[in-house]
Each structure stands twice: as structure tokens, then as C-alpha cells.
Image 1: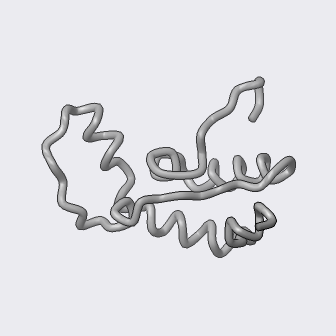
Image 2: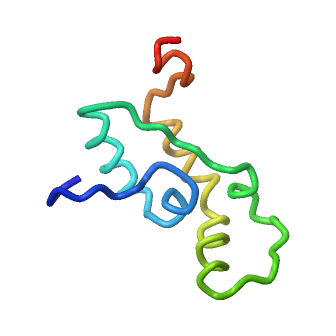
Length: 91
């Protein structure tokens, strides 16, 4: 990214954390040089995931953005071309 720093953007907490406008910008930037892999656990897209008691920071990292994750992924799928990892790696 800019200023010589790398920012994780492509899955899990980071996909849930960042707004869709930033995700689109960042994915476009990375795609100039290489492919982007997006990954998520299934529970991260299900707003009714049962929550367990965790310390405050762990709770934030684990559950923040779960309610918007499915819509973000849906938006990214509609706006970018995706391929199976097998094809990207030439396997």
C-alpha cells in the first residue's frame, strides 16, 4: 500500500473491519501487482453466531462486523472477477 506499509485486507477480521470503499480501493491496488485471496470463516457471515464470553479486545476482534460481512462479500463478488485458487496457482 502507500508509504511502504502493508495492511491486511483480505479476510477475517480485516474484511469485517474496513469499509467497503477502502476494501475496493485496496484490492484494486494489490491487483495491479498480484492476485488477492479473500478468506472468511462461515460463522463470520452469520449474524446469529452464538457469542461466547471473551475479554473485551478478543470479543471485538472476534465479533466486530459480523452483521455486515455477508453484504461486503456479496458486493466484492459483484464487483471483482474471482477464480478458484487452483487456477490462480496454475495447478
